[in-house]
Length: 214
Image (cartoon, helix red, strand yellow):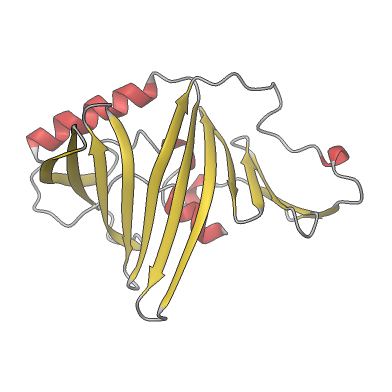
């Protein structure tokens, strides 16, 4: 599950280019990023596909992520992961168990709260393709992290220019694994309860609490 978070946080930009930035791509990503930054909250439903050619495995899951500022709530594979920018709660529904950890953004490849607004944060990028799909203007952008220590080496981002939205992300790991996120729905500016980004164990009878904080 930690691996899913690491990659989901990378749901925006990466690729192996020259040292120059594609001006057209720069303009597009700036528009997209600025649009998302205006939202107080964003909810995204997605389909997650992970494929390993080395291990000859393929897995498909559906998930939902909700972001507000530096806080996030992720539901995927029978688990709910909640972060208030200080603490992370990982609740396993089947086991009725919650693990509690300190949140350290340095341990993740990219912060989850940057998921839709990573423009300009340590990447080189260029436009690979522009096309029409079902009456929409679609652009494929390739990006690369300047930090070569990252576990991934490339991200391909599919943008719907018509709606100024991100609709698909492909993340390429150095170990040959690919991660695809197809964003099926996006809902900005949801009204959330005050304690939405915290976990109350009192709501879960007989829950097992594993506190791993220092």
